[in-house]
Length: 296
Ligand code: ADP
Ligand code: MG
Image (tube, rainbow, N blue to C red; front, top):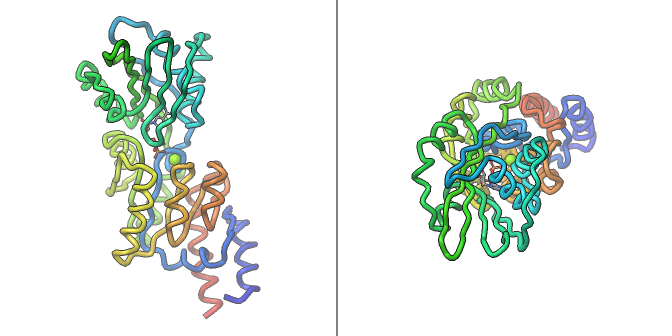
C-alpha cells in the first residue's frame, strides 16, 4: 500500500470510529472471512450488575456478599466491580481476607481467618470438592437468562461447603445485533469465544443470532482457537476487550480491540473500535475494501 492511501484510510478510519494502528490490519480486514468475538465487554456492555443472590447453609445474603466482596477486593475483573458495587449499595462491611489469589478464567481465592474461601465459576467451585447439587437447577435457570453465575465455597477444617450463588446480568450492547446481522449478510462466519459457562454463552448467542459458541475457554484457548482457524485456511479477525483476549488479539490476522477495554488489549490489536462500537467493524471493512481497490 502506498503511504498516501494508508494515511487517507487512517484519517477516514478515525471518522468511522476506528483507530487504525497498522496499515496491514486494515488491508487484511478486507479479506477476513471469520470473526471470533469475546462476549463480556465486547458483545455486552461489560458493566455487570448483581441481579440475584442465592444462599444455602443458612447464611444471609449480606454474609454472602461480605465474603464474596472481601475476595474481589483483590481482583481487577469486571465481575469484581459488580460484587463490590452491590456490597457497597447494601452497606455491607467486607470480611477481612488475606493471601489473595486470582485464577484467570476461573475465579478468586483468599484466606478468611482459618478458612479458605473460593468464589468463581462452577468448575472452580467443584475443584474444591464442594457439593453443588443443591443449587444446580437454580443456577441453570439463571444461566438460561444469560446471567453469569458465581459460586461461593468455604473450606473449613478440610471440609468444602457451598455457601451460595451470586448472579450478575450484563446487558447486550444496543447495536450488537445490527453489527452481527451486517457481518452475516457479508458472508462472515462469527464464532463467540468466552470464558463464561455454556448456558450463559448460548443465551447471549441466541439473542444475537450467533450460532457458533465456544464457552469455558481460557485465554490460551482463545489464542489456540484463532490459530486452528487460521491453520484451516480462514482469514481471522478477533474482537475483544479483556486482558484475557490479548493473546488472541495478537494471534489474529486482524485484532480489533474495544476502546473501552483493557490497555493490554488495545496494545495487542492492530485496530481499536472507539467507544467499543461493533458497527465500527462493518464501517472499517467498507473502508478497507475501498483502500485495497485504490492500491491495486
Ligand atoms: P470472559 O471471557 O467472558 O471475559 P473470563 O475468562 O474473564 O470471562 O472468566 C470466565 C469465568 O470465570 C467468569 O464467567 C466467572 O464465572 C469466572 N471468574 C473469572 N474471574 C472471576 C472473578 N474475579 N470473580 C468471580 N468469578 C470469576
Ligand atoms: Mg471480555
